[in-house]
Image 1 (cartoon, rainbow, N blue to C red):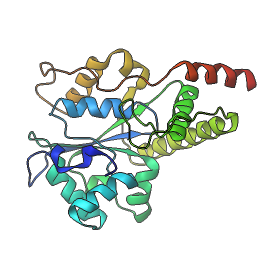
Image 2: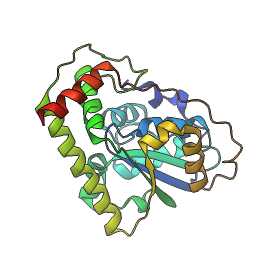
Image 3: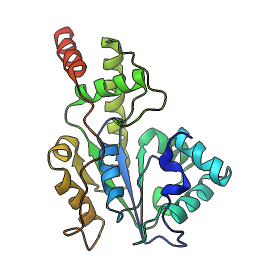
Image 4: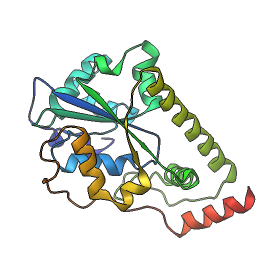
Length: 241
């Protein structure tokens, strides 16, 4: 299995309807996993995972059988909607482009009463370094152990390439919102990291969760992955620009 969170053990009780849904629109290493796991921990905002990444989709196809996108979405809504009727999903633009946009399928036709949360990171260089390190080691979360390899090699060109890709992904999201007159709730990673509980409550309020002021917010299950290697690469990159 690609990730244990995709198993039936993490499903909510079966529902035949979803009242509200939301998309966490993100780009890699923007803090979206930190935000989404925090929302899931409240048990009031669905289970917003990266359901349209290839590895995750394969897990669910193994569980439910391969189907078209509409059928897949239907099963997700049935099993991953929290008891208060909210469903959440996280997605990068390129993932959703492959599954929806290229075929002209609109997300609001698939997900009931859809709202958008856009998460971004101010320090794009650190974001790119984080992505390169994750790609080299396969450690995508601080608690991720599957297939992890301790191999790190500084690569100026690779970091530059990932930064350029991030700019294009951000532009793609901004274009998507502009074309559809969407004003998402914007979350900045640096603020999320400093004010975690406040940020989670802000999103719950945006989603219309009545208990957002009083629900307990567990501490984050993830730790920052930035380390001395990150700082060394950061300083070296700036010297070489």
